[in-house]
Image (cartoon, rainbow, N blue to C red; front, side):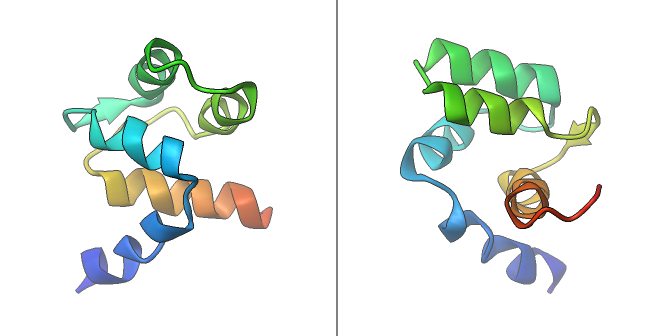
Length: 77
């Protein structure tokens, strides 16, 4: 049930961010996401956003999308 509520955040993500996250084998840490974004030729805005993710382990794309939602909404982590 929790994954269902988190999955709604995925559709809020820019298409390029979704593509980057879909190319990652989870679990990962923030630095792994940043590295994949760089390799994928992400624009500076995406690199800035993933750089703002808390440094922790992410078990799924839904976990990352939830944290990015907080960043977009200005909710303190």
